[in-house]
Length: 468
Image (tube, rainbow, N blue to C red):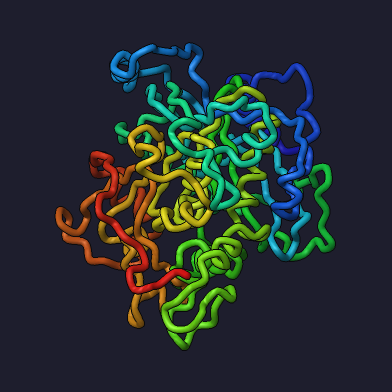
């Protein structure tokens, strides 16, 4: 071997060893076999008896019970906002779950620290993300978290008759969460989401227990992909869910057709039946602007919709690292999915340029005000005023969404929104290209202070529709 090659190999091996020892200490045991958790129907879900580890989003070590409401409020007010040690997180795994084309596909890629080192050398970008942490509150069901129903559905009611999601059914707790008032933290979360669009080389993938695929061609184009970032001791994890492929803004992307289907199911008023020229993605339209409410609720809860698939990825990560704090983030469609999961389980969630998710949350029977207060939930939507998708104004025959077949009609968000005024302050024009995450990182979150996050007031979706 030539001298230069020997030297290069020695140097890279040395730095790879440093990276491995500093970010991923040797494990005392191998990662456990991961069960294939997805179930086919809600009927099967209802009969499930699960022995899996209960879900955790970073339960605060000390919980308190107070005899009077005033003392409880005072205590939480004194604790919220306290700074905790920073977390350093590095990409550890990529999980890919198939959709309607490969419903049984489930694969995991373990990321080699040596590959991360090479990436740092080639790009000049660090592979570790520093996240500042603060104490905040969340809501959790009062029922025993080990019960299969709580693991399976969290705050979600599976029927309209289920009245178990009122204030008497939950408790407020202190947890640790990303400090979204810190610009550097917001930039790092955005970069994690940018990484989730990157296709990782496929030879390292292997099938998880119970996961099968009938063809080695085309599986990457189907389903949901989650990038899992971990702290050195695996006590804190962030899952970044990939968003919509670039067909919306004039590009391509392998998952673009399935992404469009899910966007149109979750974020349209009635199965993307925008007008007479559009083909509905489900049969719930009853003529004109009338929609079958039960039908559309069943449609957003079908097994090949990304919400249920993303939930399986969430369960898998929790089973891989029992007791770890798990946080969520996502951009665009990925942001909408993570917001729905965060609301389902009370998990700290930060989204970027997500379409309005409140309509889908209502159809999934997730809790809403006045039963809960959004200020009690660690759920934040970051976006800017020049993005028509985030603003819910990518509608009408002349819009980019209409011309590319996306019915992005919902505009109201759950939780709190943190809105950068790029139109008023920076004179940006409303343009679908400003929805691209790279533009958001370089032109918005890197250069502007994080705005105050507030509940949306007076927002209403689908005013012209009648739901039967």
